[in-house]
Image (tube, rainbow, N blue to C red):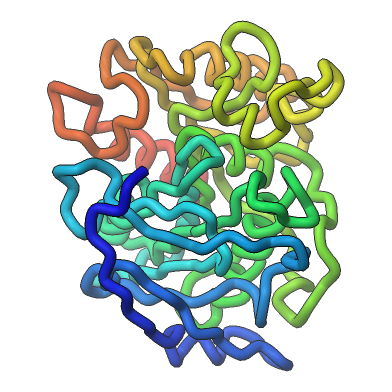
Length: 327
């Protein structure tokens, strides 16, 4: 992708983020291409460099998602400094949401599936956090587990922020989109595995969410309905059948998975709706409460695109589901 507008700004992580944790945590300087939208605050999730950076030599960039995008519709590539971007609600409801944008594990659409969703759910009372996570093809020592390291760390940090931000740590939802839906499912539907060495007090928090939502998610890494681009970025060009199955998230669903909301468009040509259907079947097999909405149209990556082009009312369906399950 060509860089359509690059304004080099050096900003310091939000001063209040320094109170996130006890111990040696110190916010790092963040390089930013576009100014943060009004009301948002951003801070790094790791003190110092992210784990396994010894052979990482990429340069983090932010570009516009499309040529006609506004400055809030950016995408990041080659993420070096994983971050959380927070938006506080005017009228808190005592709960929080962690959003994981998509981008095929090649980039992260932080505006389309981050800022816009945070605004929508902050209106409903949630303290909102948007995760900018590392990508598996950039040389991180953890390889395909690098995004999962960031997701686990982010969820723990969000839980640790509950007293300061006045929400209940046991009322946190995780919502992921496309490849971010794969990462959200990886984070919430499998038994939590330790993917990095604990750093500070936040890492004593459990990797646990009250609710999960997978929106037009990449689920399968094998078979005719797999998203080839996400699979290549995550596992390489020629993964073995065993490796593809291991990263297919309709396999090994944990009985401890929280209630799950799924949404997909039937005309999705990029990530077929069979991904959501296979996940729904796996959840039902483990008796996990689940709700799945299949919309006539919307294509892939519909986010909050207005109707009739896409099912823009899906957040209301999610909010109804969330309310029934205490979020």
